[in-house]
Length: 180
Image (tube, rainbow, N blue to C red; front, top):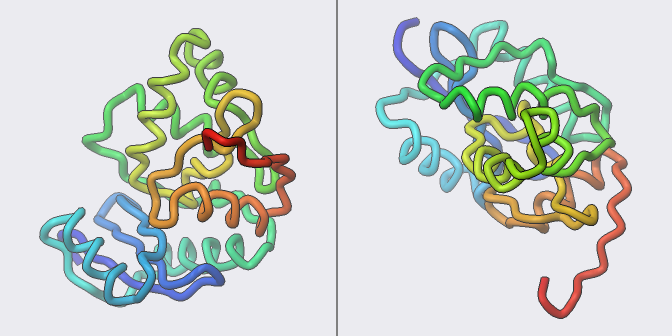
């Protein structure tokens, strides 16, 4: 199989999608409300991709994501990502985020410190907002200062982020303020 392909799969939070090429997974799509909307978003974001049955290594990735979203601890570390074309800084952020175990959280500032300084926190947040592989690169495990949820670019926003953290058993003490 050459070129890019995708598959839709059902999870506890809805129909997700995965896109892959010759060198690994290139994108993951969180649910958009319906399978058809998820498919449409994949086609919009990934250009010339065709729907196909996943090869064994991609099926393994799908099975791992289904397990994780069903509450079974799976760090998905063995999933090969193809992040060719992703800026080096973003890849560094994603490498650090992939080391956060299920059920645990860190802040944007924690990752920024590992990359050179807390002043990079906003850049870390922007990189995570552009994450092409949510779930596999667990951006939902990264919180704002004060352990507040911060943003989440997936459909459903912060509600989706909190739901994913709840499924994993993470404790997030968040009482929305007047300004959340």
